[in-house]
Image (cartoon, rainbow, N blue to C red):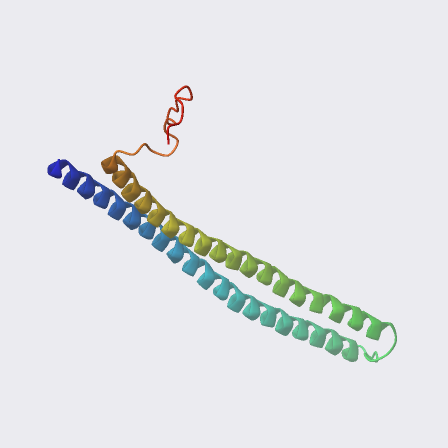
Length: 165
């Protein structure tokens, strides 16, 4: 009987350790993926800032070329329809820069959300490993004690026998 008990304990311990290890390994992998997603979100933000600045520089050059062309033809670039054209061009070019920022921010938010989801998954995997380990230990204790498992047959009560307590 002692040998059987020690074997049950050893099997339960091995199963519990395996469950904890598996949960922690899965959690570590999810955490690494979360860190990668967060780093990618940061990289996207930096790249977006650089692209936005490049768009603004290109826009400034285009507006400068427009003004230079207007002044070479002898038009007054600060009044009339040419000023309206420059104003509309400037607004459209600014919209291009803001669109670049918006698209980059959407992409980085998506990556941040992925990172948060992966961190939550890591916590759940770690907890699952510990709960599986506890289940293995409690199952072994229940088997050793000879108790039925949860959901086992209900005890039979004989109601025909009078109570003599």
